Image (tube, each protein chain N blue to C red):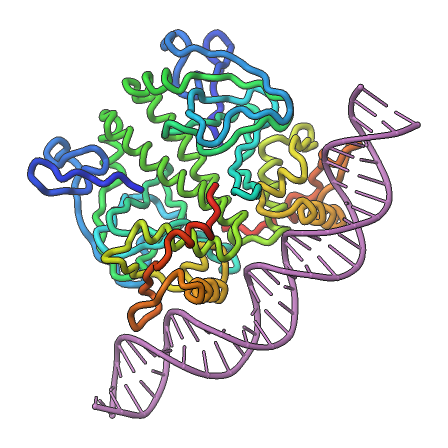
Length: 227
Length: 227
DNA sequence: CGCCTCCTTGAGACCATTCAACAATGGTGG
DNA sequence: CCACCATTGTTGAATGGTCTCAAGGAGGCG
């Protein structure tokens, strides 16, 4: 998880805080916002990485494709998350808005300029990269060794931490997105969720099947073996 | 890939160079060496990360275990590679010597002390972490979406780049290690290698089956779909 | 020589996938 | 307001790729 930022002395949080900067200490770095419609591309794989992004609202998927269309989603980015932070010149994933999404953007170049003489910023870039690395390492274990039920359980536990509000988890992503994140097919994901429902571990709430209530987190955690 | 270091004015390369340091500019950082026997643990998951390591000779596997013993190898570390570089206080993998392995070690703390006031070193830490992240991202695609033949092909291509000498690739790791790296069973790996042999894409050389010659890199690359 | 480890190969089982049908939702336009 | 259609999700049946179980061979080492 990215470290939540403390609201500054003005009582207003901004994305620069995530990098260890405040607006006034680094007036060079310009901030702007942009809103993407559901399903639109934010950047493509191998495009030059001009900006770094922070999700203000909405949800984003980052993925790689094989030549024949098989897709692997590497991460979902939710409110507060920073993504598109590449050390290299070009993006290593394609990023798309899952639902209508507003992002803050920062020019990568200006960030680098600041990092070049500010150790606090440099340190935070390392810390964010390490967070991504840690997530990827855990995900390799899931993709390489877990069963479908374990994967779906792990997914629910992750999303529960990240977006449960008032006991309800409103998933922004489709079954296909979940499947491509977990290395499964959408049918297998659906079956696993049905099974968890039968087991009384979760309940469906709204009219859609994307609103889930976790009824038994203990049993759910038990299904996902820990490392 | 880690950036190869230039041998210094003394004509002698050392591991500090990888971090952007030379021995004389940073006499604080002590270097020592240690040799691990085949199969011995270098550090365990969740152990406190006291040292950072560089492989001088030999080979190391980094892995995570599930409670029931299922294993996922996240990376192999070969001569020149740096591993055990954690931003957090504890290791996220268990590291074991695959064969007799000599490593150079650096106290993590001394490295951090230097990084705290040396931007070049801080930048190199970020660059190394990014390299690991990039590898993990590519490996997620492999584990989530590739077939067994594609995985083995990708593995051979990776190892070919890293350890082929005089046309011969001498794999230090067993079929089980390869399987746990690729999210397969050792039997499936063996069958895939046999198939590649039948197809004339590779040949076995020595008395053991760990020495491989790639006969048709073009066809091999064709089997592993690119992203 | 005998034992151990590692690798290969075969046969059958199983979990996830594929293919298919159907239900439910939401948006659109008459 | 409702019929229509596209999208999304569920479920069933059959297939198939990988795993499991098993046997046998080859090399290394005491």
